[in-house]
Image 1 (cartoon, rainbow, N blue to C red):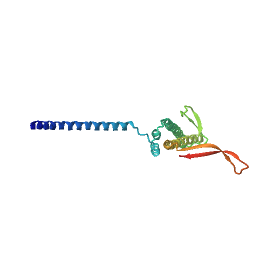
Image 2: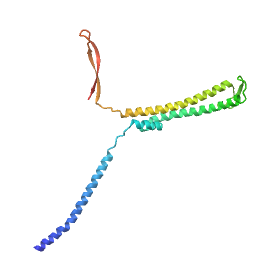
Image 3: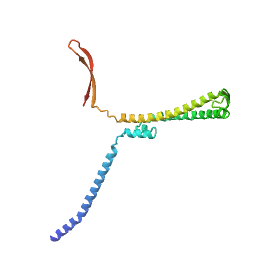
Amino acid sequence: MKKLLIALFFFIGSLLPTQAQVLKESNIVSLKDSVTNTIAKKDSVKTPYKIIPRVATLRSAMVPGWGQIYNRQYWKLPLVYGGFAVNIYYIITNQAKYSYYKQQYINNFQVTSPPSSAKITLYGDESGTQREVTSSQLNTFVNGYRRNRDGSYLFIAVVWVANIIDANVTAHLKTFDLTDDISFKIQPTLISPDMMNAVYGAKLTFAFK
């Protein structure tokens, strides 16, 4: 009997490490499953896209159109870059004409100093034709193309500022909280300064929840 108890004791003792190992492995598997489920839940919940007006303004100030991209208004990009492209084109065109007529004025009227009524013939100007002009006419061309060029520079600045203002206003509108906490209704009312002369009107009522 004593031998049987000793044998049973050793048998149970040999099973204990195996059971402990099984429990340990089971706990590890459960922990891995829990972590996996937590990560999957976090991935399934998308963080809403948050727009900060200050960021949109700074980005448009640094790079035109960047604020519109940040606000996800991609359709405005052709307007922004189109405004820059048009003005850059006029700057290049007017600069070329200004340089041409200025050089003609210097060569024909400042170097040789002819009478003010004298005319010169321009060959191969931007229109490809020949024309006779006086010094005052040539000077008018020079000043006119210079003003047009400078005006295009000014319009580039206007487009840049408009791009910044648009990004700022759009960002504020997108972050404006439109909830159902504010409501209003219009209902008829009776305006009676005295009991004899009653006037019908309308009453506007705001309700804050």
